[in-house]
Amino acid sequence: MRRIRGAWRGLAAGLWAAAELCAQGEFAPRLAELLSSTPGAARTHWGVQVIQLETGATLAELNAQQYFVPASNLKLFASALALLRLGPDYRFSTSIRRDANGDLRLVGGGDPSMSARAYPYAKGPDPGEPLAIIEAMADALVAAGLKEVPGDVVGDDSRWVWSPYPEGWAVDDTIFESGAPVSALTLNDNTIDITLTPGAAAGDLARLSSKPALEYFTIDNRVRTEAGERKLELYRDGPGQLRLVGRLAPGGPGRTITVAVDDPAQFAAVALYDALTRRGVVIHGRPRARHQAPNGKTGSASRIEEGQLLWQRPSPPLPELLGVLDKVSQNLHAEMILREVAWQSAGDGALGTGLEELKKLLGEIGIAPDGYDIRDGSGLSRMSLLTPETTVKLLQHMHQSPHRDLWLSLLPVGGVDGTLENRFKSKSLPARDRSRGELVRAKTGSLAHINTLAGYIESKTYGRLAMSIMANASQVPSAEIRAAIDRLCVELSK
Image 1 (tube, rainbow, N blue to C red):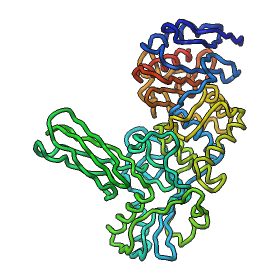
Image 2: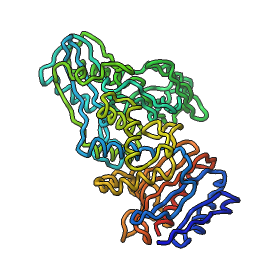
Image 3: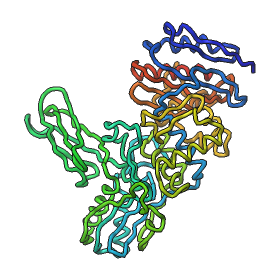
Image 4: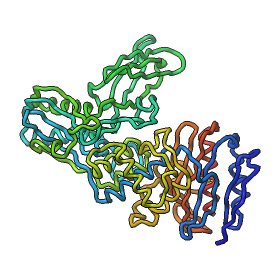
């Protein structure tokens, strides 16, 4: 195929400074027309690279070697690292151990699946109860004869270094589900749902409930039942302390806020303590956490595995975990995967070690260090940077790997599932072609002022394409930027 390099100019009064296209130039005018139809896009920073996988030829390129904040496109890198370093048969393990001092220790093994989520991935709401695994654990311990705990109930996440928040996460992120703290002992994605409903009369405090119903947070509830616009504000006043301020209209709907816990190991210990005491187990101590401080020694395998093993739970296999991670774009799970690679490579579970292992992998692929600056595994950090070219090289490598089919199955499918379920559905943007199946399998990315998409397109003319499309620094509503990206993908599929 003849490679043609040209320039896209005049797109919304100078949107494109330059572009590189091939396929006999037929993409150039249509792409310019599509993207220029997005109002305000001229002030958006765009990066694009599209290659034909069969030949490696570049079909479209714009700012492909410039840095962009990738948002959740970065999860592609964490997922690829996990598949290639841990392998598709890998499973995590969570255990209960009885120590010589009488403590009952719940030992985290890095498993992200200790929740109500369905494995393998299934569309729709989570089907189970958030603490079903803890309840089953308590049942098994009591059935095995546990009647008394002389010491404490300990949530032990010392498999990994206790460093819960990567560099570049915003303070507001860490309050909510998207920025839940990273821990080797994770339960219910380290979150609690807090629901507020209006009181019976004006002036009453809003009624408060939580799911799971644990006494983990101390909540200062200042939400009043008052007429007017529904408004709620949440503040974290200290460890385990929340303050809720605002109003809910009388007779109006309630409001549920998913709040991140601040100490996942303590949260898990509280959950197990509660489940055991409800079953009549006498506990002389209290629920508490055990962490591994940076440069500490408590995360060694011998330390973690001491004591009598009472119960053990294997996770679903790694591909099922990665399927949920990528389909729903779960930040915490991506961070956990990166740290488990660090544990397996160096035994410390530190974020920095995981990033070094990722750097090694990218070097093996042929990606130079100046093609990225990665600070986390999920893409929530505003300090993580990628180029479109780097992203496409990873996609190309994984498409050529022995895990290709498994890799493709992890990605959201346009118009079908995951974060692409509601995209590519209109008549002008069809999700499927009967002769080619799904047109787009790709990972989305979204932060304030940022929208990205990276993955694969089935092209009627050129076969399967790998693409990275990044829009940064945009003041245009995200829906309009996503629509422009989707139209570009459909045009490339022709």
